[in-house]
Length: 613
Image (cartoon, rainbow, N blue to C red; front, side, top):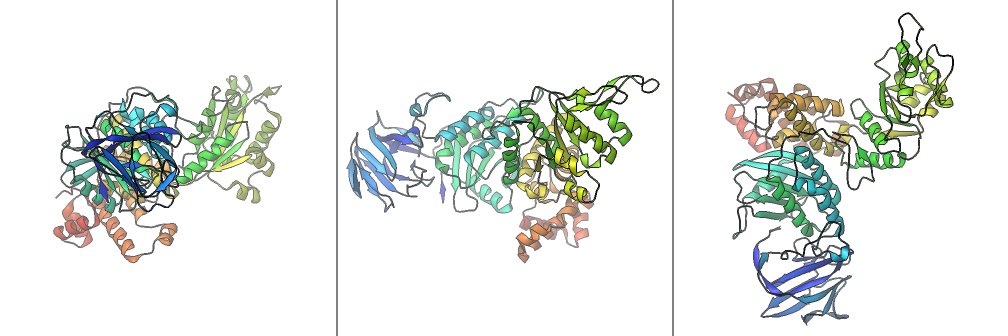
């Protein structure tokens, strides 16, 4: 079912009351006004106990009637259950658990369907009883934290506001696209939503529809696509030549009432963000329980990363030693920095040491320090433990530490003091130790390669970071973060990314995790012509090769032959373009196809790219 906002004549009747603890008011239209929890109703009451299509209120000739539509919990007028009754100002009508009072408005007029005229001015700090917006209070919080996207000064704030929008609304994800031709979309930002050809075709279809009678060049069209999975709310500026399209995916509660907020963000996105000119700073996000994220960090919205943040919130208080485990490149050090910034030690130093990068005989000096005169020309030097006193010491790759040094580290952790090389007296230190490893420490203990007593000292809590292949919904947000960063570094604007290229990157195996993804995006930005989108045939052979080998988890999840065949064909075409340097004729030859045959197959598979030659 498709529905959108259009101008309609309002009646002289309205409804006013409380919804989810906030004051709400609705203006009723002339004719039929549907009431229920479904988002395409005129009066959306998205609470348990209200049926999808609960009732209808008909306004004609200065009179109003309410008719129950067979609801489960009934419609009541002044305390009596009714199926069809006339309404008057002052009456109290109840739809299931929601009680509203019938009001008389000053005058009728033209408004957008399902919306009320401009509400009385409110502030974001207003109490719930003063709100007249009809938006549930947790969405008011979303509006507060999305203000940077409505007044943004740079592209970094756009991504942060969109992440907040997804989390607070409970949506599956958000896409920001630009229409750059009759049948061509390029993706400018993505949070959570995974791009699929079917989704893009639905968005393309939506862009061909628009209601008549829009009043200004900046009119925003909002279209609900409810008969697909996931349901979409698509908003765009109707009369913009190359509009930015905001797509909110997911069947979250009360989607209809979220439309004003989504349209506010959509209108703001029509402005081009200014370049980033100020250094990034640590930041917090709504709904993350007070965690402070380091500058440049991209918080993951996937369930896997949300579990990690949930555990981090419990580790902030106190000084329990933590081991962060995970594959190479998953981002263990940023999590240690979050722990530092969110704790009472945030004003102390954060000192990182890579135990695998320093020879064992030098690592002791690096950690514990050295006194002057130990050897000819040696000056006194403080170790990392002393430098980190009052803060956090991060020991990366602790599993590579030699047995002799493990024994000395154990003593430091037991006594709270270090013995610099050549020193006569120990030095007291106050340090919280956070370690990281890509190895199985318990397995190393069983093999006798890591001390068991040291393990119990450093692993007060073990925090596991999942690899990228287990949190693919986080990949699009990381891609656009890296695109913006490298585009800014080399001073070359990039016109987004083609849907096929984004889908390919999301589907890659990424054995090197975030670090490998970062390197791939840097390469793509360098190869991309200015102001053009990144396309499929510029992907590296390593990425395409990993796409050709589906993981056991992916095969177990979906063994449908036709789907696997389409995926294999798509990946082979991307590989052919990569090997041919983007030349259409050469790619067709490698695949044993004619140029026209390759074009038709690409069209059928939803691949778009402008091959040369």
